[in-house]
Image 1 (cartoon, rainbow, N blue to C red):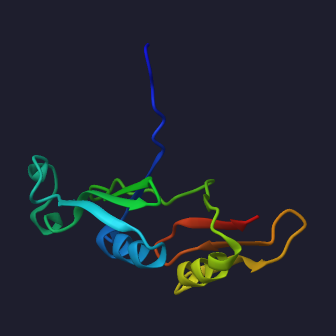
Image 2 (cartoon, rainbow, N blue to C red; image 1 turned 180 degrees about the vertical axis):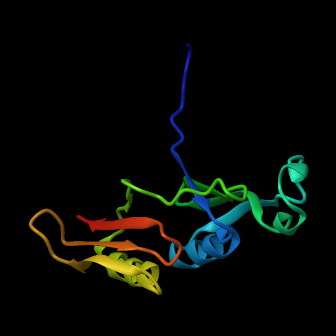
Length: 137
């Protein structure tokens, strides 16, 4: 192997709410949706019921050089996110704002506050069921 680049990508699954989630994350995280393909426009359109045609087969969101990917799982295949947390490390100036945005309609699991390891830390499960940790060192 002559060279390899690590390009971390987080792939999130949704139960029909991928488009709304990615538009929410674009706003909350100052990102940019770079790709969004519906099931109906994909070569896999025949694999889902016609009413699922407008749901998202693949989406990409670019945030500060990192790619978040997502899709609406095929009907009956969705499994809620468990045992992970997407950690964000914004500046202390941005951390509380990002936390409050992600918490809109979600569930705060650990209020944003100063801790012994960080100038600010908080955990939230957003309105789409995705767990986030905000850690400003």
